[in-house]
Length: 380
Image (cartoon, one colour):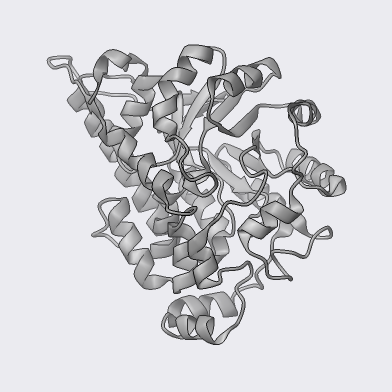
């Protein structure tokens, strides 16, 4: 793991350590995976223009997001089912985020409870909310999140139905994993993963406890879960009511258009995550980075803008901030590392990105991230 210098290195180690269906769940996206690839490729279509002789012996890579000061400009976006990837799951990711002083997101489909995370993890925490048909479940999650002292609530708005994740269909991935001849063979080829999974506490989705069995006791694909359990009638009025019920910093995850960014401001959101769900929903949609400038022109200065998706390098982070983002977030950049080495893997992934950001700031000739402007960018 010490030889993992970048996200690609962690991806390869995760591929070797995980059973095939679980690796492909992390690694895959919708349909032809065009958008998934484009999320990173978009950064490569833009060049940085550095300045020199700027006196960069000391630099400050911190940012403020939703009132929280983060020691680095990227944080761990909320992702589901983490104890499938490593037996410590969200516990490992939260502890790593705390060490690096950055936001840690926990999903409605997390495998560790809000209460445990609230008690054990001191770093700024956001809860990612899926708007379910079951209104009792929705109320319970909000109340538990408030009682656990979370700092922000993030409503995901781009999962109104499940994306066509063909890799999952081919491998038969479900939560929890089904025991079939094919899956058992894959587990046998990965005895370390199988030992940890089957000797650790039983897999569960604690936020759904007492309301739904799908995903924890009843196997279901993530796409089917979204299509069957989430409320496809969700509207802006529902989002506004949820913001009022929460009463604290509130973010929408999955905003991609300037029009929706403006509506987010109008209903009182604190932030938006410009995201296409890592290309796992609508294949053919724009990359988040390609939309940052347009959205910043519409609402910059009125709301925090988070570029979520495709981040693989410190230079990607600097490009997003120069285009108008407040900060960045990502899932793949730490999930591969979690699968590769648990908490130590996530810490190494965050350390790699932190070191790249600091070095790249110096090479760009800036000492603070708010010195980045579109004058530092040239598009091919």
